[in-house]
Length: 168
Length: 158
Image (cartoon, rainbow over all chains, first blue to last red):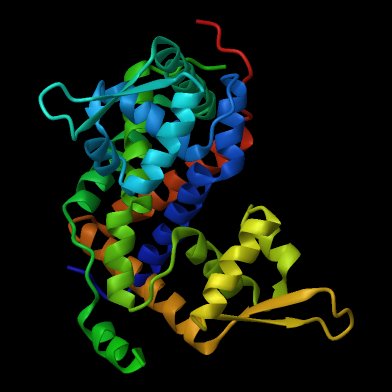
């Protein structure tokens, strides 16, 4: 249970995670990564190509849901990836209404290259860490993810009340 | 360059990716909009957060702080202005320069979001000791700094 005085550390953590999030979602980083991998892709394009590379052939709707993007945005990005020869789309043999998407050989190569660039960057970033510090970041981050995944986002009771007043 | 075991690398990479999806996903955003009673995009929140930290600033400075194209920042500001979350005005000294700031409503929505996220984190981490939470903050801060200081290499030799 939260105790008095906890707020401070939670806020610090929020700021720290926001910095991490901003870094990972920054367009600069996305263009650095794709630049280093020798391809010009948007951040969403990179995200989808990698998700597809991990999952293998998948229906567009499943891909959208796995990457938490809306279908319209996914379709737009897939069109760009298709034009660049990185993915193919086809209708499912069992249900013509379902569109399946998969990486082409060159799409799989690009996805692997992007992954290598990211891993190498991470490896260099962590190279100054002692092995016990690395173990610590590994353990804490996976525990954090697990705890975030099983926690619902809902308003705190008292702020929910105040919220009611604000909603005009 | 020290050698980082690949099991560590893959674990951290996987966690970062999951964190990213958790934080940026549209499900998360939809829940959040519902809870604070205002529909604001991810980029919109970045603008609100920046304005919350900076106070009134020029459009140019805002775009720089948010690492957005000026056109993208202008579009975000336009949409936030329609929702009465920010207001813009010409600079008193130079009418061509637009100044942006949060409205009271915008400041309220922003603090609701911060409150919501902090409470969410507190609930997610309720089984963690203060010590463990403190270590997590240190570790994430250090990770961000190191990730920022290392450039992305041009060629991968594998």
